[in-house]
Image (cartoon, rainbow, N blue to C red):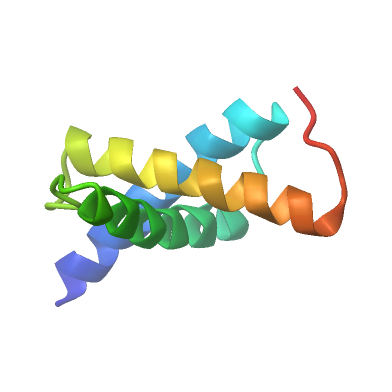
Amino acid sequence: MLMTVLCWVMLGLIAGYVASKLINGRGEGVPLDIVLGIVGAMVGGWLFHVIGRAGVTGFNIWSLFIAVVGAIVVLVVWHAIRGRPHQT
């Protein structure tokens, strides 16, 4: 159980940081990057499930890719709702 939580936190931190660097050009800070990455993993897993592909399968490169894609979607939607254009 503890290892599962730690893996989600690590995956979230990495995915959130990569996505925020790609969209904003900077990280959002450790706590927000973790939350962004975890939410991104859930969104990305759902999106990939909808198109018939495997979602997050563990702590691996495929899951990191899905989490980054999901986090990018979350950031784009967040910036669209807030009305603030993303910085590159």
